Length: 250
Image (tube, rainbow, N blue to C red; front, side, top):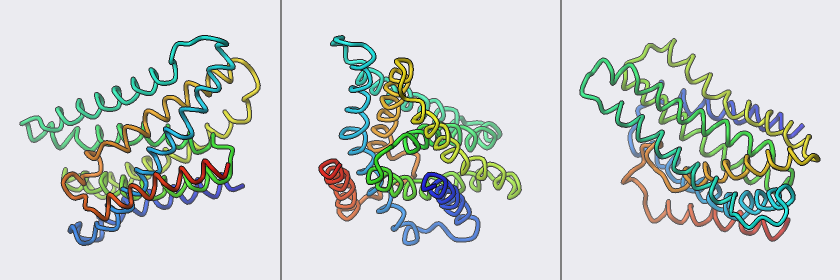
């Protein structure tokens, strides 16, 4: 039941973050809470990847591959970081094209593609988290992050002068991505007894960890470059410490 409640909450928060710029001026003073909240979420993502997901993937690979010493988990994770960074750079290069028509046509869709891929993977990781304490803490991070992502996406769409009706269609589709990933992750967790399931879960956790590492260390998509402060860094550290404490409790 808690999975379904959280899926609905994530959808509402993502939608609210995206709708906010449609009604309010996006001045820096109004975005401070989003910047600090996202910094806190980044700390949780970083800690969740290193402390929880990578060890879990290592365990599943050990069960599936026996005594193999090849670091499958870490190779997949770092390749995921590379692919996410590459996808973002391709999007930015196309968005920075000198042609105004190309810029306005492609920019919001490329940004949405990157965010939707990330949202599906994050949702799957959340739905595949069996421990209640980890699920709750990770849910808090996802909720904080989805609002910031929705805000950035909606602002970008407004800058590209898309119609309000079209913006609504895109942000609803974006808001659905994480709940869809959560549902898929939940069913993956239910079928975790076979050898193939161990391999699937190991690969998925490694990919999710790579995605979390990318998001935790990258600030381009949130439009917060140059806006972090000592307070934001402290929130970032608080997120890391929180997940470290959760690891002790579990």
